[in-house]
Amino acid sequence: MISTELRLINRYLTLLEKSLTGSLVGDAAMDQWTGPRFEPKARQLGRDWPSLAQTMIGEARMKNLRQCCESVILDEVPGDFIETGVWRGGASIFMKGITEAYGDRTRRQFVADSFQGLPPPNPGEFPADAGDVHHTYPQLAIPKAEVENNFRKYGLLDERVIFLEGWFKDTLPTAPIERIAILRLDGDMYESTIQALEALYAKVSFGGYVIVDDFGLPGCNKAVGDFRTKHGIDSIIFPIDGMAAWWRVDHAPIG
Image (cartoon, rainbow, N blue to C red):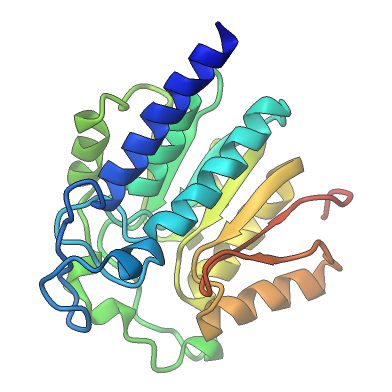
């Protein structure tokens, strides 16, 4: 019976991943560097922007996210799941789907985003973001209502999905969350990354995971390095696909 249940969980989560990434139907890209076509390798590594799919992080990062979520569920690591920077909501939907597949009725899924794209760079306070152009892409500004509807399409919108709408500096320090098992950062910039780490990292449980989607981008990478150096964090950082990375919290609480 247990084997049958696990097989069904695996089939559901595999199908959910392929649907959320657009790989299931070969959803064409909409970015200017890929062109209007579906490139399996680009989709696997999250190197394109899907036209209709709910996530752009690619299959490799989705598989890593699943492994981390399953690990904290099976190891009974306490805490909620949160993603900071969600685009169309695909990765957050996947996390919620994983908790549902395993019958976890206690963890909440926090969905944090401005829902109006990325902020213009503030080089006076965050010099590493000088010249950043993410705010110029209207494709990155997805309204909250659209993300909510994406959750609804998969039957995964309920009272344990909590939206934090606004700039991270305003929403994350006062977020109603006590413990975190999965902290997924997808803010692209130094500012977005450091604000999320400063507000939330101390809440990550021992054995929880920190996943950094844009670790390969200079601003994000510097924010992670600055934060880890400041707090003496030496947990091993593992690469995922040449862009994203993760580590497991294996040290005493900070702060």
